[in-house]
Image (cartoon, rainbow, N blue to C red):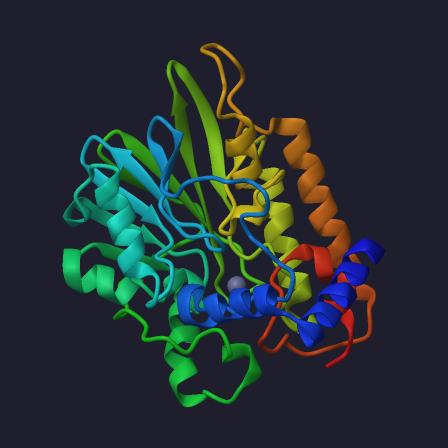
Length: 322
Ligand SMILES: [Zn+2]
């Protein structure tokens, strides 16, 4: 924690003196990723991965440097997990084409959160492909209310046009697309209806239970913390999981980009670099839950305003009453 605080202090001094790189990043955040990044935060880090890339035989990363979007291939079309935002969605669609797939084959878009970095591209994907957009009823409500409550702080990350209300996710429902099965969970707390998705990753003959959990960040106000904890305890109990693919690269235990970068020279038969293993994932859940318990015990505070840091590594910042 202290190291991070020092890094932020050093970064802010650097910004005031020269700050070209930090300014660049912030500009890219606003104009590109559409999410203002804190000074000194480089999502891709030192791991020079080229987007898009393959994760499993049937799973590809088609998101951007800061926000994930996974393409899952099936025998009957494509499934997207998250839509990136309205600014980045053209690049996401281009990423899908670059991999040799036709975006018109997208059948479903499963959305983890009613925060625009995850849902904002969905309206365009819907208009273009007719794909079914799936969010939980509570997150559909949240998107609809955002229009009337534009100045409420919890809607700060919900300003982009929402897709028309479409599929409503029920907790535990299974959606079959061709030869693939997806289990959908409602795990509220980060947004009122955050969702999480389970599917199977193929690596040759091996099969892995993959979970993409929504809303692992603790940027919500303290009155949502109990629900957050309940949802993540529920997800842990649905395990054991072999793989977490986070809805941000750095919400993947071990950082998705780092795992992919370090596994690039993998020989046939070597362990899959992204398979974290059941014990490590249980530890990861316990760490997250521990942070959430600290948050639950801290003085009450509101939702974090932009520019925000949506990671778990900045808990003291999130905990400061505001
Ligand atoms: Zn979020």
